[in-house]
Image 1: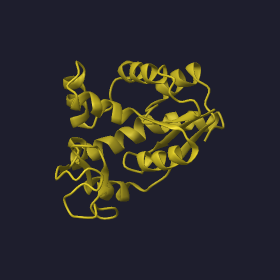
Image 2: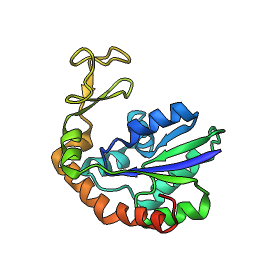
Image 3: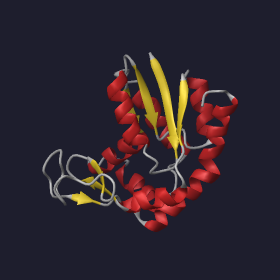
Image 4: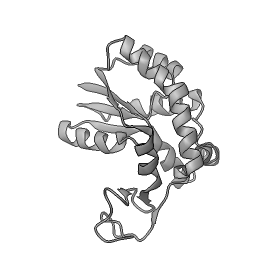
Amino acid sequence: MHKYVIMGMPGCGKGTQSEIMCKRFSLVHISVGDILRWNIKNHTKMAARIKRLMSTGRLIPDEFVENIVQHRLQEHDWNYGFMLDGFPRNEAQAEFFLESYDIDAVIYIDVPAPLIIERLGSRRVCGNCGATYNLVSAPPKVAGICDACGSKELIRRPDDNEVAIRERLLDYEEKTLPALNLFRRKELV
């Protein structure tokens, strides 16, 4: 069983690369962002709070995310292992995670900030099935129509506006890089 964490700036391709690796190695992709967006889409009790926090680009509070991750990992549907995407986002979460779980490695994707801003500005998501596109580098086959489900609802995520993107990049530098450095000290990267 293999347990991995994938890290990098928002928009660096963690989700895309996770899906590729998970398919190739029969791993389960556990995306904290997808879990949060699922709660919003399905109008759960947590949806309003999550939506408010995500629209500002700020990180979701530690305890909240830790509970989501613990709950998801307790489902034990990851017989061959998992790829955890979107957690930990700071050093305290990294310490919590290392105390609770053994991981094999941290995969780090390094992409320059200007390219991140460009990528996120042109990202679109199908409002029906969640398929992700980039209008510049990976557009749908037919403009404005989802390849996966045929929906015409290709939307910009609320947290992909320029103010929120810059806030997320600043949060990454201030909060997530120390978590990555902790994993480096543990020789997991």
